[in-house]
Image 1 (tube, rainbow, N blue to C red):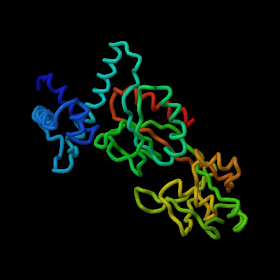
Image 2: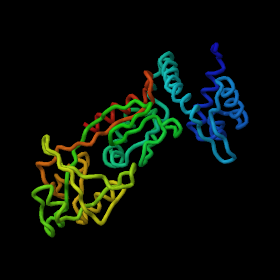
Image 3: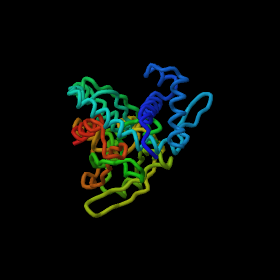
Image 4: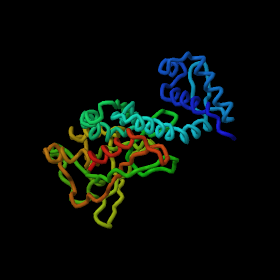
Length: 300
């Protein structure tokens, strides 16, 4: 198919619709009427030969073909924008809105406290943080980048390892005073209450393991409380409900301040990875690039 220069304008409208979430809001952002936006999308669908959106009276959503199409072209739009900025010799190279899908643990305890520093570096950039249990579809949901704990699943996104934080077993002073301190991982299974963390992928509790060098002990632990977020896990641990497995990323300060006790300090070799995900392309926008660098900096 010969290149149709009008495609670029249609793709620009498509990008605005995805970012705004509706034809009406995209029209407001672009200074167009809703029918004009709808016609532009319809022309784009006709030119590329696919249906890009599922439309109902109340909402729109990307079709599978539309998602794949936008995933392929979105990074190139960012590259065109950056090239235009460079050509104008503008100093505002990092600008616009950065939408981030973030794991709650990292968002609450590492990213949010440092965002003021990031925004100060880039005064022409605004950031929207969305804390979610799962990454979902970055393209359909309009996200530029995601930061999630866990092993990457197969996908079309690019994944960058940011850190591997240790898994620490902790309890409050009150809990240890009442129930004693375990001397071996097996002691936890036989005489202790644990605070369990729900795995959003399975809706069951995360399994516990204890690592010491090459030695690994999987452990079936018991507990009357299961939570689905780090704040509740920390609160229950600090309140003496039971033993909890915490990530060193945020637990190290609690241990240093004496708010929790590190149990079994010789069994702390298990690690949990933190990855950043972004659209798979050789073109990475300036705002995503500086954000990835910043996250690696604060996660170090």
